[in-house]
Image 1 (cartoon, one colour):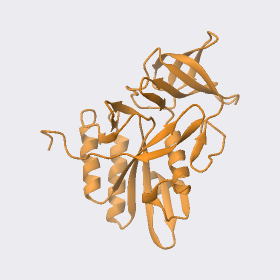
Image 2 (tube, one colour):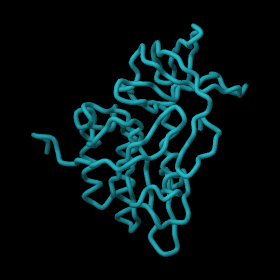
Image 3 (tube, helix red, strand yellow):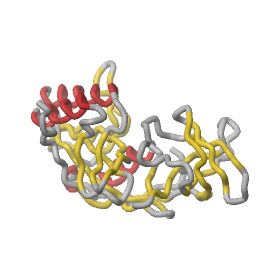
Image 4 (tube, one colour):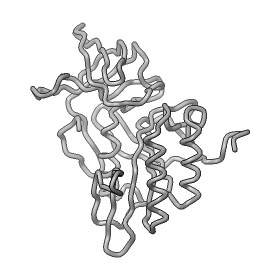
Length: 249
């Protein structure tokens, strides 16, 4: 996790942020940034997606700084200021924020559990992000996905083909068939989305599997965030449209 500061009732504060201007993102996990003093640094980009809606050169970005001698790169890219919203690019944030929000009671659909476990083994070759447990109800597995792709107010996921994401959906569907409760939780890490849909034009197989999972009992939850230069917290649920695109079977 890029910030060592504790979450406060579902709110995660940023570490001290350093402003700069994005020069380029490359090799997936690297970004060159010009700081306000003119220094050009290479920062770790903690996001393996295409980031097509949040990596435009010339945009203001915010980095965290780390003095750990074991780190290869001193800086981590946390935020970018896009025309419609600040956008969180760090994919380590959603899992932690979702778990904190559930513990704080900020996700009414998932209230009533007294244990929140993270990074749990679901089978011999599968791990899921969160397991909720309580003595009086079925366990609930929750897989969290980070969403940053927003076009004209519509948030979509994924922003690149994700075989791993398809496997997670299949695992959730298998667990539902075995009697467990399961939820797919999409966290939109920006504030300019009004609704959500699968990105069928980018990964039609994922969209198909998401619809199949929903039809077989996997709950689909979508929330956006409130995000500023102090921190990030869950904001509100977004409507999710799972109807197929025109002409798609």
